[in-house]
Image (cartoon, rainbow, N blue to C red; front, top):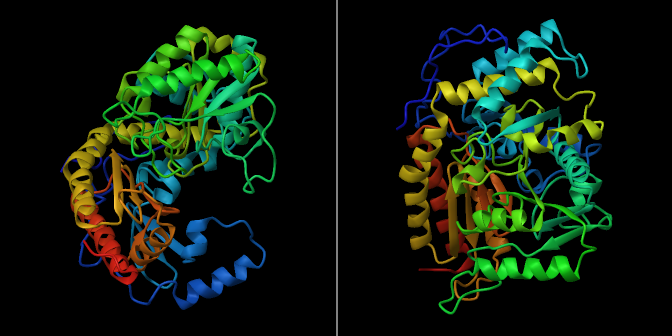
Amino acid sequence: MTNVGSTGKSCCCCGSKNTGKYDPKPYELNLNEWPKIITTPPGPKSKKMHEESAKTMKGLSGQVKLFPVVFDEGKGCTMTDIDGNKYIDFSSGIYVTTLGHCHPKVSEAVAHWAKKLMNAHDFVTPVKHALLEKLMSVLPGEYGGVQLYDSGTTAVEAAIRTARAATGKHEFLSCFQDFHGKTGCSASLARMNKIYGATRLPGFYMLPRPDVYRPWWTRADGSLDTEKYLKFYDTFIKEGTCGNVAAIVLEPIQGWAGSIFPPDDFFPKLRAWCDAKGILYIDDEVLCSMGRTGYWITASHWNVTPDIVTLGKGFGNGFPVTAMVVKKEYADAVDKISASTSYGGNPMACAAALACIEVIQEENLLEHAKDLEQNVFLPMLEKIKANHPIVGDVRCMGCLMGIELVKDRNTKEPFDEAGKRVYQRAFSKGLAWVPAGHILRMSPPIIMPNDVAAKAMNIIDEAIGEVEKELGYTK
């Protein structure tokens, strides 16, 4: 196992006075105690509180509707509900608590600034200055324009406005099944259906995106052909747009769609395609960045440098802080879009983000995420696929995974009922995680010890096996 834990370093700017006094091995668990179900979840207290809250709180996510427990406490890679049931957290909230719950350094940093200075609009503060310097030191490429926000969709909206200001063009491309937010322009980059109750705004167009498991265009041997996708893009911008495309916006790995991974040649070829067409490449890393896949930004896996990057979720480990980062050559465009916000870049947010970057560095968590991928997740995912006929495909990069369930491996027909049941079954065994229809999504904290990760994967393996028997599937 990669060594994780405090190195005893501190940061006066983020507000953490921690000098190594917290447990140097804060993530180890007694696996006889975690997970531990003492009353069948959702327990009576959870049911009662959920039902009462649901009378007024509407629009709950699918994962809550399928398993309405009420969580009361979290520490590291664990969560406890109000009935006393103990869970391994395999979702990080929703790709958010990348460093686990209540990391001492992050919590102390936020608390420090909550007592000292809570908001100063977009004035520079010592902690903001320190965050900007630290962020520029870890991001690959020559970046020089940054603005801080409090939500992913706001950062994406700012990226859209910046691209328009930098290019003088107004149209945008994105891909089917991408997700970029729930406000006007960011929603127009994604699938528009009853979730939004609106139609796509003018000037926003969607393209097919390479999916290795479900390719649209293939070579003679049946393998995915990236070049055919790019040729289609060529035709589309000539025939389907007004010829004023400012940028293409993509997730490096599609999250909401079910952890859909591109072929390794896609982003390098897309980068070259953008350069040839004079189109900016906006990399929406709200879900994937800050160590989730073993990199500061996932685009680095393919050695490509985006023109604009959006960061979020794990950037503040639960505190609402996001960022838009722009290449130096386009940085002046940020001054043209009225980029500042009321809450973005407040001292508490900056302290959380700065502390997160420091923790990732101090605890060697990028390497640990890669270690989990290579030595725990990939081997166990392949074993799960080999042992279960309803598993059509498995995918993993760092601590971002997907298991695709199908009724038949030849037809690849999605198996939504199995997805629902496996999600609920594993949750009832003490695994808090994320469903996406027939695709099971996993995003554990990158601090997770290898033995805890292995136990979580065994729970999933057991749940799939039990559901297969219920549905009449055998190997």
